[in-house]
Length: 507
Ligand SMILES: [Zn+2]
Image (cartoon, rainbow, N blue to C red; front, side):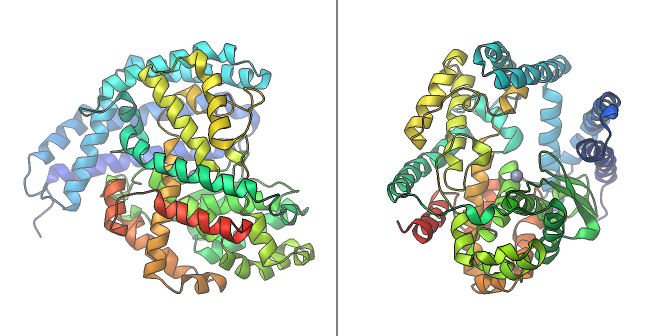
């Protein structure tokens, strides 16, 4: 093995240092969401912005640019298919994107984002879209400028440039091509479900259970599923999240509702899926390098959705968990059967709010947002028409009437601080999860039996080997092809949802 070129070692060292600094920033953020006293807010905002500035400076320094160029000129290092070549491809990408935006635009985006978020909060509370409209306009204007700085491939559109922040290599056309058949089949399925009558009761989920019992139960599930609690934690926040702080430190949060234990259970499973991905990335050897980074939000979300929906909402899971749930959550649990729980967690009912939507209808919420933000960005839709376009689509795709903008186009925070091109990654996650899941069941035919016995190690190993350990070596679409042998398609998710509708609604 030839010696590693000095420029490459130095570059990796600089990237590792920047990643460690970023860990400090993540820890500040985690603390702010969990244990920081309210009085610390202002000081923390200063600390966070200072840290963000330092990390950005480190990652965009001329020295980094110089080292990247040196490494790129080294043919032995750039051997196609090698680890260093993959690292260099991604470092170049990160560096170019980070240095393409003028500082003045970055500052403006941050400032307008923070102000617009405040206005959005008020507008939502007062159901006043007109108040938010000029800010939304301003945010899309700035986002168009941002997209122009990034640039996009010939035949593409501005949306691609923004999507690339969250789903590298993805394009609006690709998303549209995957979403269109999904929308058609989903509409058909939801119609059948709606016509089938009332559907199962959610009563089994509405047992009153204290938070500390739920917490101990959550830890039990995490441990059994293979989340390493020596290298991770579970805490409580208003908005659950997972933070891969650094090597050996992955933190999950959840929230407890006394009257509906399934909220925390599925929230915890979701964040654990993200957490297992973080724990499975090769951070011990490659921390700070792209090889230890996640591929995209879509792939990250595929991991959380898999544990939440494909494992956690399956019958084998409920077979395994029932006796443990009775022990941890109380004997009231015994009033219901595995079948009751399976049905209760798999209802499919059109609703107004995305974050409360079930597995089947959720994707419709995402598609509506994708269509609207794409049209706003290209100028095909005007901001003033958003409420009308929103409501029309809810009627058409989900068959429901939106009573006000508070529960309509003002419900999500994303656009207010410039997260455009982010929504599709939620549905991409569901699609990837379904496609991986079919492959997993082919490779591990005993999996249902294993889950019913509480054995998750083969599943976890499969994910570690096929997905996690590669870091950012492949693009999401490449990984999908490599792992499943096929391009991403809507068919596996539709098969999964149709099977559930059959089991639960008999349609
Ligand atoms: Zn997630």
